[in-house]
Image 1 (cartoon, rainbow, N blue to C red):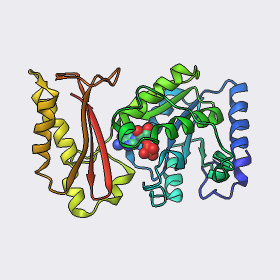
Image 2 (image 1 turned 30 degrees about the vertical axis):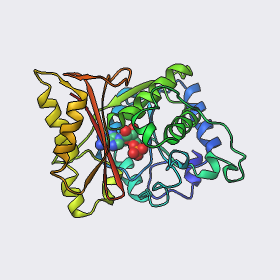
Image 3 (image 1 turned 90 degrees about the vertical axis):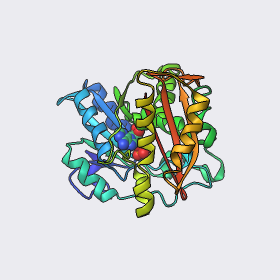
Image 4 (image 1 turned 135 degrees about the horizontal axis):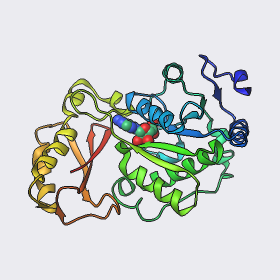
Length: 298
Ligand code: AMP
């Protein structure tokens, strides 16, 4: 395979950085009737990412191939966000992926994905217009446009039969499912559960930003979800009341600053007035400049 010539080879896992080489490889697999499982990531991999890779392998079996992309996509970051300092460790990522028996790692560069973007020569974007409006979309107005655009591009390059996303980014998974359905991508989307640290904090590449004190208090997101889950077990509450209660609850973590909390229907993402068992809860909380998100079905 051409990947052997890649300058990014740091282990025996095959790496392709070139978009045309990637697409040719995928087309060859398709012609041979080989099933392709795909996990898109921004790298700095943790056990949560690896669980998606295992899920992809389960879906395509031994005769299929699993492709993982590692690409910190600039179009999903606002100019004020952490694009430049987003954590990266390709060498370590490749080691982890090799151990898992991943067939190919796709590591395109910006010049490959968005040629001429700086000179405004890149001009096509994919925009989902309903599910992407609230929560993360409201807090980060250009975020989902970047996500749907890059995922559509990656789908066209990797040609997967199955793609696995994490429930950790619940809204993102819903937006991608909608895009796949609306644009008729022949791809099955799998949503895999959120992996957590021992204390309950959802694993995230951004946890690395947290100072010791912040890290200790960050578990408040999980505790808030757990408390809400327990509360609605046999009873319903008004969303307005629960939002107030949550603000009070968060005072236990003085370094936490609430960005948003929402209670919504998991299928439509429409906010609900009355919160009960089965309602989806999502929240975003700042610790200093670090913004953490988490969610759960209550
Ligand atoms: P990222 O590298 O943050 O873009 O994430 C790549 C994929 O991993 C996305 O589908 C995420 O939802 C998923 N993911 C991130 N954190 C977790 C986690 N703690 N458990 C399971 N999946 C996750």
